Image 1 (cartoon, rainbow, N blue to C red):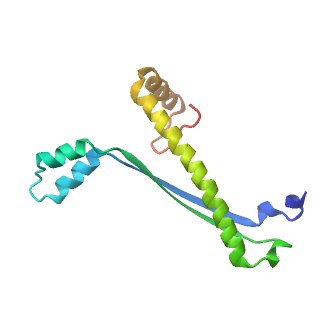
Image 2: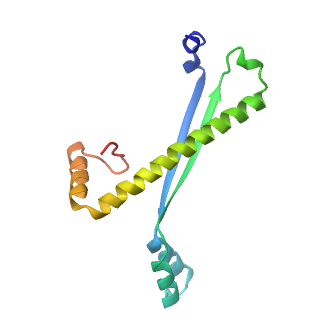
Length: 138
């Protein structure tokens, strides 16, 4: 009713850019070797690197441009922006948190279960998945 009446879905532009970065102890060891001119890493660095945890970092940029309809257009722009930013930030934190938790669980299963790895591999063969494509719902 109200959303259709003011054509709210036609009043905004929305773009999202998300980057996932994987870092593991091998990456850290490579960096340590690159920092050393001779390519030599002493035993202390190697032992330290072996104990490092792997991590995934997520960075997301969201841009929203809204043509605010009446009666909301009378609200000061700064208040609208702060309210919108807070809502988007909270939602993104929830979505990304769940995504990372599920990704970690999926990886743990993939890393320990040969049958699951085979199943996932068969999905990519069936669908002719190309590098960079995302398989969802397995």
